[in-house]
Image (cartoon, rainbow, N blue to C red; front, top):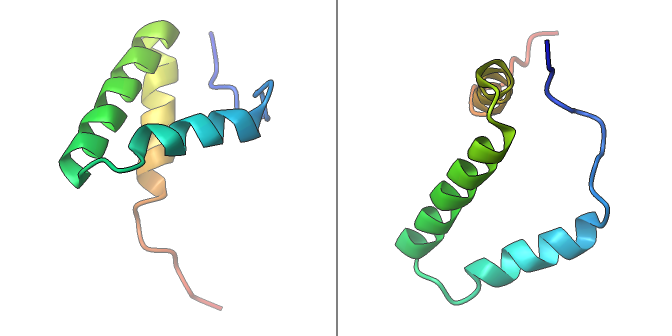
Length: 71
């Protein structure tokens, strides 16, 4: 069963970050959201495996949940 790759796997993370931020430069919030949505769908299509996509979605949604500050 394929698993989501969580170890760093970029050939050049700085170049990707620069390209990503450049794609959003001088765009409206709505345009940026459309770029992000399209990018997500393109990458999801590339991955293709439903279990991997659901694992990624679960990990991503955990980041949106409030962090516990219990001692």
